[in-house]
Length: 352
Ligand SMILES: Nc1ncnc2c1ncn2[C@@H]1O[C@H](COP(=O)(O)OP(=O)(O)OP(=O)(O)O)[C@@H](O)[C@H]1O
Ligand SMILES: [Mg+2]
Image (tube, rainbow, N blue to C red; front, side, top):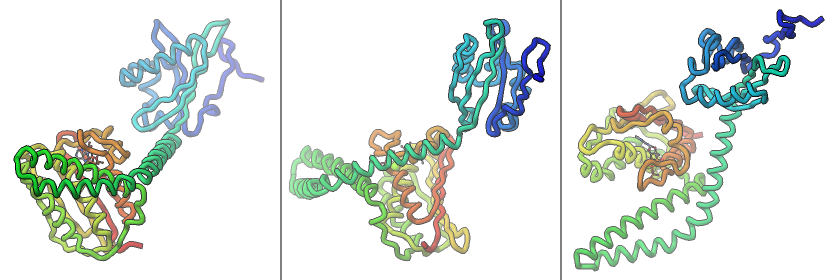
């Protein structure tokens, strides 16, 4: 026999309906507001929004206004009698929800909603998208970079000769600009070629990490001086480790360049430290007190072509991460807007 409630509705055992990684909720319309009458499912009540915040309340009571107003549109459609499906997220948790209106005598009397956690699927989707982007970039790189490399080398060579021979000032300055721009193109081509065949370029030997870092700092001294910023290298420990010197140099150049670009003229130092953290691993840390980044931005920095700079390619960090992965290491960012950024690279001393 079916169980009925006071109004003659079938009594539903909601526990049976609650998906393991989801939740069930109900709402009614009262004085033009949608009031939740029920929510259950540990997925939401334990981690995101406690039951007490939902039951007896409207969306605007427990969600940020923008999110609440978006959902209100779906709630209205459901109250008009449509079955509605939508995706949403609370913080980093993504879910898909469906709203099913319950009618009595041809009128909607309440809506039952069910939501599933789809965070993992979303993450996989994002990963696949990133891989697709990478392979598109890779194909493009392989096709174009080689074609451009040869003519570019002649252009750089001849421009250099012209610059050495030109003896009037405006010509010197035009040729200077040409050299800078050609260097920029060369840099982009370099990056594209690396993306096209990253593993072919690896040449592993034992190097002093201290001297790799010191050399990078030395090569950038002029830029630091121009900006009135100093760089402090704390190298109490001497580390010798296996790596590809030119690749690790590339990583350090970009990270220090990023730190320098994020720091205002004549302001605080940039710090680099090298530490022995275990028998097998060492840590390079680069800290700036520059602009810092929001969490939103932090999520995007490894994406190809993500840049906030007028002249940036947005390939620097993507390549840096690849290089660190090729070295079986980890690169990690911590950042706070207005306070600065800290990059930690953990690397093994010997590679498998
Ligand atoms: N130390 C930092 N402080 C603040 N923002 C940073 C820092 N490092 C990176 N970013 C942000 O991450 C973005 C991506 O950095 P990435 O090095 O990949 O590219 P880019 O510096 O813009 O260009 P390029 O390819 O020439 O290096 C930057 O444009 C910047 O917005
Ligand atoms: Mg950069």
